Structure formats: C-alpha cells, structure tokens
Length: 92
Image 1: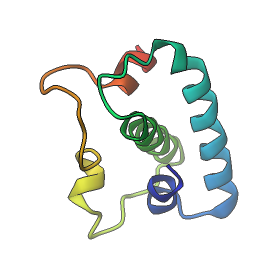
Image 2 (image 1 turned 180 degrees about the vertical axis):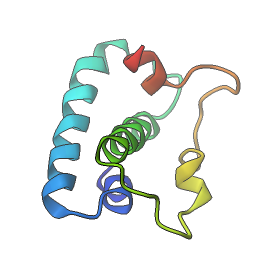
Image 3 (image 1 turned 90 degrees about the vertical axis):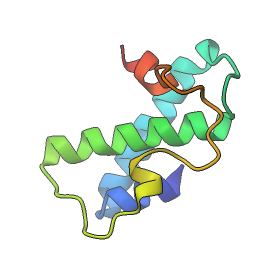
Image 4 (image 1 turned 90 degrees about the horizontal axis):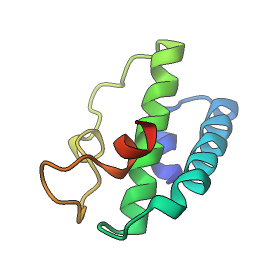
C-alpha cells in the first residue's frame, strides 16, 4: 500500500496523512470485503484512489512516466471485468 502512496504523493507529511486515510477506509470497509479479489489488491486500489483524491484536492500534477500498471490497476488483480472495484463500492 505504501508503495502506491509513495509514488503519487511527493511530500512525506502528506504521505503519512494519506496512509492514515487509507487505513481508516480499509477498517471501515473490511466487513464488506467479499474475497472476490486478493486483499492486497483491494487495499492497493483503496490506496490508489485515496492518493488520487488527495492529489486532486491539492491540485498536484501526475509525474511524467507514471507507470500504467499503477494508473490502470494493480497487476494480478482477481476482480472480474466490468464489475465495480471494491474501492468504488466503498466510496459509493
């Protein structure tokens, strides 16, 4: 989870804040996790969306050369295609 946040949030204090937000979202949504994907994938998606939301609030641009694997999901995702991601379900 921290590697996703580290790549998206440049400031250390901001990264700590985003990681805390991720842990809160994971804690709140864990009861609804249906094991349709790996837990690590689910947490990484929450981290990704939380960090992106933070960047939008701070209006930080994405760095050039940002990896497509992070931008389009975590490799090895077991989530079925066309289905809402757990993060999208959590944020709905």
